Amino acid sequence: MKNSSLFNKLSYRLDELSNLPKLDNEVSISKLIEEKGFSRREFMGWAGAMTSMLMLPASFTPLVAKAAELADRLPLVWLHMAECTGCSESLLRSATPSIDSLIFDYISLEYHETIMAAAGWQAEHNLEHAMEKYKGRYILMVEGGIPHGQSDYFLTIGAHGKTG
Image 1 (cartoon, rainbow, N blue to C red):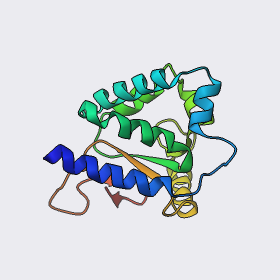
Image 2: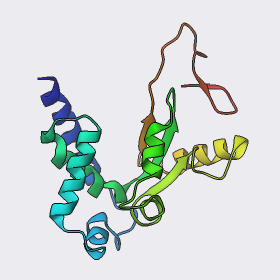
Image 3: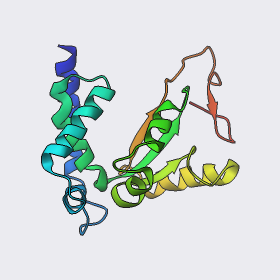
Image 4: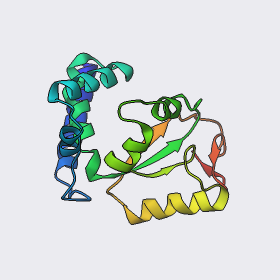
């Protein structure tokens, strides 16, 4: 029952995302995958592996595939909360596609503090700029848990000490 509810929520959200305009009408994930010589079967195998890595039931594989195909529609903002950077490490060590190919060919990674050159106030500015520029049109990836403490400052991030 719990999986059915999650499946329905994710399916609904992906349908909403598919109605948003693409960032670039000339380029799509599907076209790029085909141009790089990957078959649909190989792509679905990758989607199955990602589904497994996310510890989701195999029935979620089509949703993972659809989410990947829609990734060219939205910029990505990746935030770190209470985490060990393991998800980022996995991303950085990916082989097919490689991290450079992923960032330059497949997604628009607007903010990711581990792999960006900016630091301090400049990094904060980049985050705020991406959120403003793509307001209502970006995917927010949150790595790690969100701790709940006794005060607003149990988990603080950034130069301004914003609460997580």
